[in-house]
Amino acid sequence: MEVNHERRSRFCSPAVGARVASRLRARLRRQAVRAAFLAATALALAPRPTAAEEAGWQPVHKEDGITVERWSASAAGRSRLRASTVIAAGIDLVSSVLRDVERHPEWRNRCTEARVLQREGDDKLVVYSRTEGRWPVADRDSVFESEVVRREAEHVEIRFRNVESLLMPPVPGVVRMPSVDGYYRLEALDAGRTRVEYELEMDMGGLVPSFVTHYVSDEMPLHTLKGLKQQVQRVAEEGPGTGSGLRRIASNPETLRPRSASGFSSIQADGKHD
Image 1 (tube, helix red, strand yellow):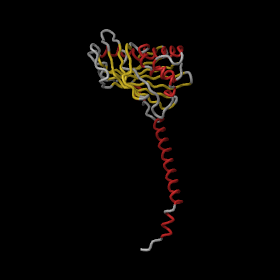
Image 2 (cartoon, helix red, strand yellow):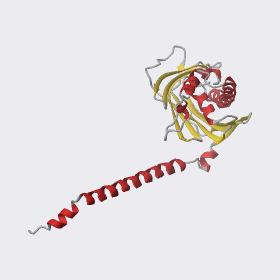
Image 3 (spheres, rainbow, N blue to C red):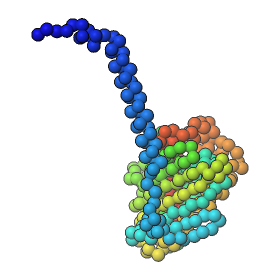
Image 4 (cartoon, rainbow, N blue to C red):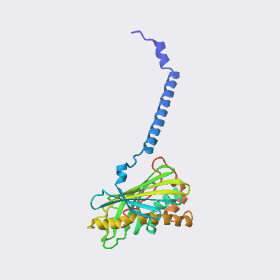
């Protein structure tokens, strides 16, 4: 077979190889830009509650600028509540108060103990929380994993869910809640105002009648957001670097800067109040 050596050498020349490599790099760049665009679009178009879903929320409280609603279709023994308010502070300050676990007993409703059991980088914590019971309900506690997702500078989402853990064995006389799940969503309205949405779904465990569960749990979001407002104001008056978690933030402010999808550590407390 006759071989066209000139043609073959032309295709194997360094110039051709450089052009192919350049085209390949350009294609990879386009693919990376497209992937980033699709990811950003997916976040921006994240599912919003439908009208039917919103209809399932029933008003419970409206007080001090705080609105509390209860989900009407909760299973027996479970309670799901949602609350929202606007806090007169920037989003970074509100976020820092939420992540300062050791100071949660200062403001979380009936919280008597809160501490970090394990820290997995800046974005994920394992937290122990204990809540004082109100007669006839005994004290409750939970171990939960908290993770912060920061979509952009104006939005922070802190999700938490109970986990099985050997880091904190059951405490005699205290009921370990079998289920705790929820989030805090923060939206920066401007430099000095932050909208906070808080949702909590839980099973208190133990032998608690449904009407007692509703009576006790309906107060939680209201007093939690009231306490959060007061704590944010208190911390603002104390100045930067106060509190255990805030000292860490003062020494490393980068923990509050946006980081791709999951942004700045936190800790959520829930399994909380009673």
